Length: 414
Image (cartoon, rainbow, N blue to C red; front, side, top):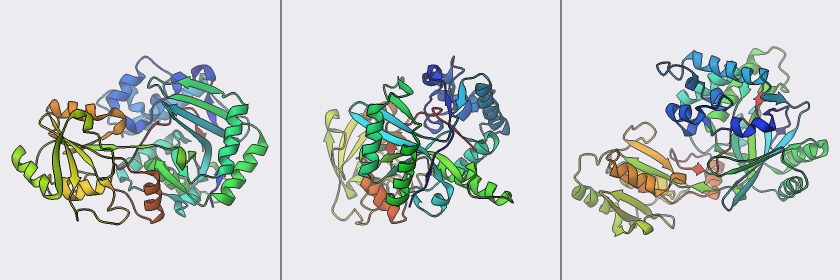
């Protein structure tokens, strides 16, 4: 069963929280982060993407970057932007985007649960990205961004968090620039903390990483390393736990994660369409019908036109991985036709989260930057959990969660 732990969070003062809270480190590149933080010395991007405060010729993995991150966070502490809560607590974090409302519990999750696979994974991590976060954590000694976890709904948790959010005023309540509303509650009632930790220990057999595989892996490895180096290790030290937000699975929304490829692998358009039609029925469609409405339906944008692709009989494997649309596209088109055999490393392919809409795919093809785009139907939370339960992993870039958690609203120092 799952261990969650209250902690003494470091949080921004309420008057600064909207300025501090930033998008996660991995949803933008260096220049985008620099532009987003421009003119805002409070932005948490100065901590999670500290390279924006160094000359452009400094490599983003240079040790100066991690030292700058440490110095920037400590400067915010010294300036009184951040403060530490006086006692260990849990927190509630609610996000509202359009019609969607999701309410999560902010707690520290257990490194031991991670290595025992009670915190389940659905994708591989890349060593270089792990090492980046490991170095960041080691030098700053903070878990600066939470791991986004899901669990199968437990009615008692849903009811208790609902009572809390309806009976107390949030300590933070703001709308970010992207229109997402963020609310945050402090659970300073010890009875609530005891009850929630007990429910997770007794009724939640596992959690699932929705977003943050690299953060989770890095935090777990840092914690394990510190335990091995500490002759007086007890298991209760803060490094044995990492920052997380846990959401009931029923509230979460996975969006499509679409693909773009730079060329047609040497084929002209006519020959390419012939190759595609071996495994897919290809039908031209107007723009308004391009977005897939069902599983096993794909949109393809090529030479100013949208097509609907429908897999032919026998192209789909009937196992939990094989039935995913990302797998069908990869095994029947991207690899055999376009020669994209490893989407994790092939520089000819790019990925676009569904939040940007199909217009972004169209624009990048029309501009000549990319040659062809593919729109996919999103996977479901049930598919994600089924695959993780089986100990399998999804193909790269299978899931895109919205809304995104904001970074800097609470920090765990270890």
